[in-house]
Image (cartoon, rainbow, N blue to C red; front, side, top):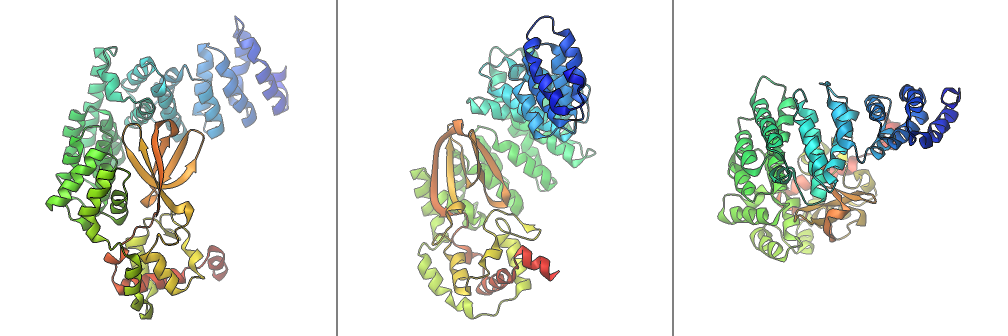
Length: 484
């Protein structure tokens, strides 16, 4: 009677009260009345139902959760409720979601990744292996396969393992290994097929990140040539970066001279996350195959302030000559900039090239650093000081933090968000790294600003005057709206 009440709160309470009867056998009558509520008009009822269906091991309840997961009306709260109900059956729900469905909606793809993360984080490998079996079945889209493997990778990494390690485990059957090997071969063929949409090819390259080091290196290096579309080059670099092998650094650096500036940024990001790769990078700089000016200011700043003493010392020797450490003297030397006439239009061009990686004005750039409209009340002299000596008055919220994980990976950026279980670091171009607290070996504030020192090396005096004029011309959002 409560299930069919006209008031949604009454129906939701009835759903909650039914949980004690779900534990009794048989539970057919209760389930027969509960499952139609998967389509209830009230989000509150569906939210409660997502919790309640987790109180029974009946397979029909799992099908009900799959119905809720596919319903486009159900947002993040209901997805969280679904996840709370499948701690022991995440692989089974994932199998239901991808079975006989070629094109999954975005919310299902997101849920698949989270289900896979649950499976990967489970102490035993049985659920991971079953998830791999589902992902490699015929008819599963590359996008769904990538979502599953990415989630598994995150979950496994949280307990110090990887997809490759699971496949190498003696308990994993040869049949699963063959299925996964066939998946990687199909992914390579799909990525190489120029008749396929670029997005499909990118997804296929993403799958190769989870292959063993030898397979990934041999296959992905084919996509690092200048003849390859840039999105595919970037995807190949990102996938190679996920490998544990030290040979990755040499593979990525082999084509440095042919890379565009954007690909060089991706390669540098892939190299600075591991000590051994950083040493290979510094070897290349010392040998002259990479110029110090090829590396962005923020990457050099990270290396010269690295928590590892050996890396920090060597980076300062190899890269330090590119930045004058006496910032007060630099500021004094550039006081003549204040007498130059700046041009806001030229300054916009400088902003796009140099500043937009961390600052946003209108639709241009990335919103990471402070809003530049806040400098309206600053004098030109103070603005010049902020550009040339960014660490003198750095705001605490925009100080760089460095995280070293238990697996030896290094991440840096400002702390964008924190939760009970993770922190999110944000860096240039709004790139983010989410690190589980259980994975953190070391977390330290570097005491320096996200804005790197040494920008005067990349800007002429006139450039500085122009960009300062542009910044001073920026109107706060309210003022810009009133002017319209």
